[in-house]
Length: 288
Image (cartoon, rainbow, N blue to C red):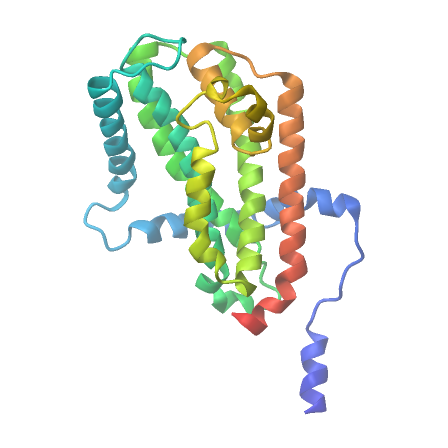
């Protein structure tokens, strides 16, 4: 008994001393060290989502296309809606809606799956030297794939209505990268905490629905009472949603200082999420 105990202790990697540089650089170093494995996990995740279906990956195109068709009919034809005072084009309104929704769905796809991530991959948890933290990269990468399809569909409808995008659109990928960092941080935190508090998996749908209505997905930030705008800016979705939409449709440039702060905050959030995940990691095998 003592012998087996000493052997099990021998394979546990020693606890490393805290390094601020290592803490901050963790998202980058993990991605670079495991990039090939992450790529294969992303591919596996995408294929598993459509395995067993008749249409396969075509569903990744049908679902957002159907959603856009509904928005166009309801808001463009029936309600004849306008985006406040910024455009009078009725068919542009549902396209603006759709542009916000694909960004939110990217966030939602990753966060909604995070609470069950460790249980879905429990076979890897007992393998002490397997980097289970890379599963968060896998679900975020898979969500990026679906976001890319939504973006391509958006372009098909955007170009005939709006024309070529304004120069400010070059900020779009930068803002999206910041959101991806926040999403990765949330995925790490939720996947780790949910191992011990399984109620989170049941709450996440309600919380994300609340998140959607507290984010400027279906309305511009200018429609929010001025006293509440500062509160909404603490929502990590507010700045990229508002800035990406305004850059794409109205040619508005987001402030460089705002973008820099958002990117820095996103990186630190991802690093903190990884830190929390690794702090809780030793207890996974006892619970899952």
